[in-house]
Each structure stands twice: as C-alpha cells, then as structure tokens.
Length: 422
Image (tube, rainbow, N blue to C red; front, side):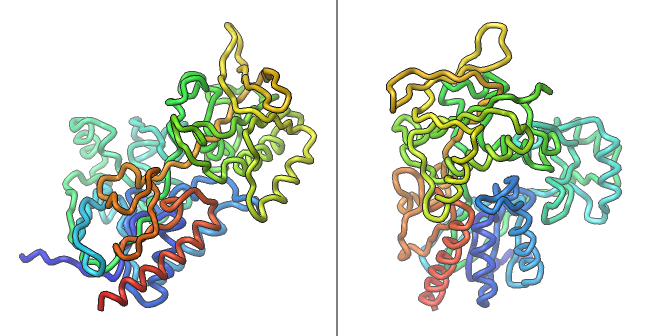
C-alpha cells in the first residue's frame, strides 16, 4: 500500500491556549489545520491554572467554549500524544513528520471499563498534571475536564513484564499491540505555540527548592489552590497538615539574572498577588511577605496591584531574596534579603516559601525549531519570510489574554503565507 502525505494549509504545534486560538482563527476563516499536541489532552498550562487575574475566574470559562468550537469544526485535525519530529522545506512548501504515541487503550473500551481497571490496579505513576505532587493509576484520565476525554495507559511507567501482566489482567481495556505511528504532512505554513516551562529552580541552590518541602514554585501553588489539585484545593505545605500562618513570595527567582534568565517574565508579580489572595481566602489571619526588585504590573493590571496593596496582612519588602534556610530542628524557614531602601538585612520566618520562577520558552531547546527564527533567549522572532510564525509565550513572556491576541496575529500572518504560496 502506498504511503501518501496528508496536506493541510497550516501546522500548529502546541495546543495550549495560544495554539488552540490560532488553529480556530485559521479554521473558521476556511483553512485546514493540523493541530499537534504532545500531551494526551489540550489546554496546556492554562488548564492547570486555578484562577485568571484580574477577574479571578477559572480557566474553564475560556477553554470550554474553545473546545466546543474545535468539536464543531471539521477543518481542524487534532493529534494528541504527538510530536513533530521533522520540518523541511520553505515557506509555502513544508514537509513534516509527526510521531503519534498510542494510548494503549482498546478502541471499544468504554469509560466505565477503564474506571474499573484503574480502581482495581495497585500500580501508580507520578501525576504530571499536578506536577508530581500526587499519583494516579497507570490507567488514568489526565484530569476531570480533559479533552479528548479518553483514558491513557502509561506504558512507560512500568517494566515490559509489568505491562504484559497488566494487559493480561485487564484484557478488556489495555492493548499493548498498538504501535507508534509516523505520518507525513505537507503544509504551507507553521505556527509554533509550544508555550513555556517554569525555570528549573534547583539551579538556584541558595533558595532551597528540591531540598525543603516547604519551598515550592508558583506553578505548584496554582495546583495546590485548584479544586482539581492534589489536595482538592486545600493549600498546605507539601507533606504536612500544619496550618499556614506566614508565607513568603520570592520574586524574580532566576529572572532578571544573567546567570539564569536575563529577562523579566512580565506576569510573575501579578501571579504572586493573585496567589496571595488564595492564601488570604483560606488563612484570613496569615501574614504574607512579598520580596521584590520592582513591582511590574503593566496596563490595566495596575488596578490589581493597588487593590492588593490595600491588604493590611500583605507586607512588601524591596529586595531580592538571597537565600532560604532552615534552623536546626525547626519546621519553619528563614527568608533573607537585603532591603534596598534601608540597606538593612531583613529576615522573615515563614511556614511556606513560593518562588516566582520565570517563563522559559520551550522553543529554546526543541531541536526541530529552525534556530534562525530564535533570539538569544530562545523566543521566536518576527521573520514572516520564513513561513514560520510564533504565538503565545513562544514570542515572549505574556499573560493569557495577550497570548490569545498574539495567536490571532499569528493566524493573520499564516494566512498571508498561505495566499502567497498559491
């Protein structure tokens, strides 16, 4: 049987909020789109947020309508558990390869069968959706509102012998005969929307991430506060049921630093203010300390800053945190910074430390990205003549609303590329 490439007008890589928005703008304008996502679900990091700022509404209010639009549009072909392995060619004529990893779930297995299998098996895996703060069974749903709403068997989290045993025990659900598939796509334009990863805070050794359980990042705080999080929305020090009385937010953890990320991630100050509200709602009497270099709240978000400043239980300290440590035998943490206004060394004893880590573009380390379109920090530059466009955090740090607007702009540029290729 002859293997023929499939042709689409555009390839959108990454199905977070930016990739979804770009794909929809193209498809609803009449163009065919292949939307590729490496996770078994779409929504990316936005789906993991507890609440948006400044309105403080959940991400479902933005994702659900977009999921419905995708379901209703036959011009979008969605590939999940898929990765682009090769991009060759030029603007108007790209040859690409997509590797599709199977779910290892039988096509005729229904949700009830999968749920029973998950309940019956003892083997577990770290829950990547909750950043490893809890576990799921090897047969699992990514999260409650996932799309596609399909179970996955995590074959990679067990040995071949264990996988065969589980397939034998749950033969009505698990199918180990499914194989990886490589498909060829011909497209006229490419949109990168692979988003970002939080900076590896373990590289900042003085801040104690990975050493102390009570030192977490802002991304872990979002999952802790979420009703679908590891503790159903109850914020607590990981591994402890101790009530939180004091919290420190450490801004620019790895950002604006030539040894780590030289740029400002633009939304970290706002994220910490939002998360301070999470703390205040659950622990009304808790003291919250925010250590900062400069407070950056661009545009309309300035009002969110002034509202946060009025809270008498939130204390602001101008100074970047130098170190976080624990006294011998203590279950609290000492956060130390030089106050750049008074010049004095300041310490705060807290129960929980939240590091505002920066946004690192995934394009900086994905080998398939054409390096000529990247700036020195790994963000995609404006180079429309290449036929490769970026949107969302691929082009620079930004909030969700700005990422959506950026996706619309990328879709317009992609349409120009498609029209020029005819």
